[in-house]
Image 1 (tube, rainbow, N blue to C red):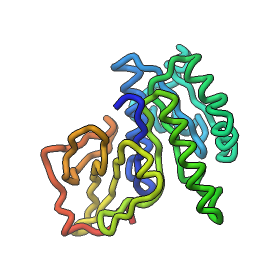
Image 2: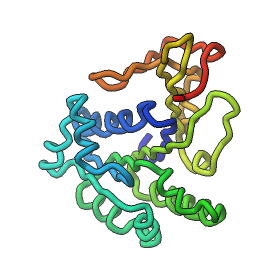
Image 3: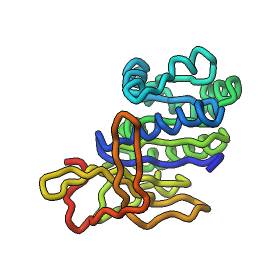
Image 4: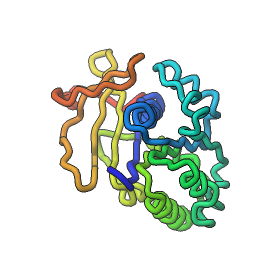
Length: 220
């Protein structure tokens, strides 16, 4: 989905960042689309180390001027939003960026723990900016993604798509799974599908279904 913003949710260790890195690397290596990673937590060295475990060499694309890594404090993003994009917009235009990952949104939201109204207004402005930038964007959320009693958050309504990653327990074993909750203007599966996370990245088995009646939790 071009010019779209997709929210990628799930607990720590479920595969969110790996999924987003694979999304960026596929754009670079397979489709010639320049990419950008905006981090609020992990430094570039850690992200590059994680990517290298899967054979994804972002450093080479960075040397070519096709991949940009930006690190901000969450409060810095407020100024960028107020400026209508600021350095993020300038970078996207200068390097012809098509794909963007913002990781994680949760760090940004924590600034508004005592001001829910301001959080909603700032999230609205952020998502309007992301749409306006004209890229295909993945926004990582560390909000726990539960199979039961799912409650929509403000960011869910503002996004074009929602993907949830799970790490379920079944009979003493762990099962990785993924579910597409929403994808605007796209026909989606209603199934929770098993997936693997190994040295090749993420593989989703769309022809299989996880029997969630026999599973427990998300990643705990």
